Image (cartoon, rainbow, N blue to C red; front, side):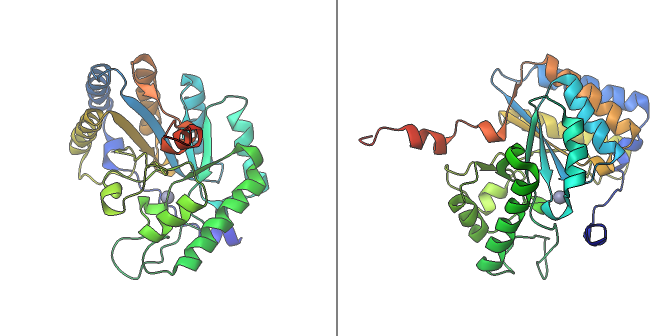
Amino acid sequence: MLFVRIMIVKSVISSLWTAGPDLLERAVGELSATLCAAPAGTGVFFRADDVAVPGEACRRMMALFRDHGLPLHLAVTPAWLTAPRWAVLREWAGDADLWCWHQHGWRHVNHQREGKKGEFGTDRDRDAKAADLARGRARLEEIMGESFCPVFTPPWNRFDAETGDILLRAGYAAVSRSDGAQRAVPLPPELPDIPVNVDLHTRREADPEQGVRALVDEVAAAAQTGRIGFMLHHQRMNAAALEFLDRLLAVVAASGLEPIRLDRLRGAAGMKKTRPPHV
Ligand SMILES: [Zn+2]
């Protein structure tokens, strides 16, 4: 019961996903044009947050990625995961080598006294944050075994500089925050931040028309940066959102975009290890 009580996942559906089929069809067409026109070498990745409890939306989301053969980064909240829940998720994953199961905080609770929410922010001391990070990683490693990837997605997409230092020293391969977080809390090249820059399911536009416009614009802006990172929240997906995801993944699979795996980056950390000592 503990895990049920502490879960604070919202399941509000963004106005975008109440749009009629014509509007969503138009969005798919515009996104297709944008993605197919992206310069060669443009990367793409997908990150699904708040994973742990195997519900129907999660099952269908994973099935879509399997069907289209595209990788998905699953940010798992350690305190919500149990061995029986993992057994179900593992079964859904099957043998496909598409999944980057990684750490999404510890309990997904806010510790900031005011301002923007954060589980690993400035209102906690370093030891408390280090303990929660270690606890979360240990739990995922214990339950998931070798399926665990040492990648960190912070709840609410943010953490403070102390946490960045703890993650670096603990040898995480990468983190994923939101676009702009690197300016607020810079990380060294040894700990690459691969941010999400397109929000599919926690949008706040007032009506579907505005939602479609903003999403299409967001993808176009992301494509300009050379990397498109889609953030997913399966608890907020309805039938229209699932149908749209199916179409989006088909477009991505057919485009020249290069899928990125955060656990397989050829980043500075790997290069440093293989660099000759005199260089
Ligand atoms: Zn989250």
